[in-house]
Image (cartoon, rainbow, N blue to C red):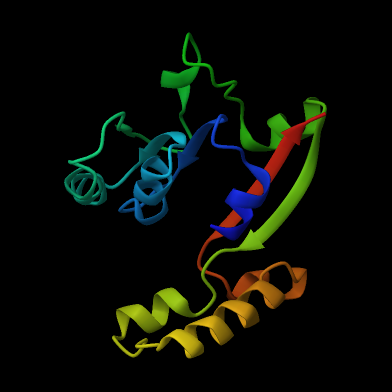
Length: 149
């Protein structure tokens, strides 16, 4: 969330592909961001919609990252193949960061019970390593942030 808050304004229209159960999505919508999401797995989408049921402006679709044709016309998104988007458009890479390090694995194993000070130290550690290219393979999710020039 640190990088989203740092580089994406809440006035931006954002498309999150592969949203999972919407852990970040729900928080962003609560903060006033205009986020549309796509998730392939039907059960993940059900959980996301249940978690976001009390929120307004929920825009979620079941779909595949390899076929985003539903967004081609009149959606405000300029959807291209991922590589094509970056090679043929005047964009600049702002950040490529790992989003969760060992956090997701620790949570699934029910061993992540951090007190405030421990969480602060973990967050500081994570923010130090999350942009290190040589450690991106240790992350379970990556966040690419690009902006038009």
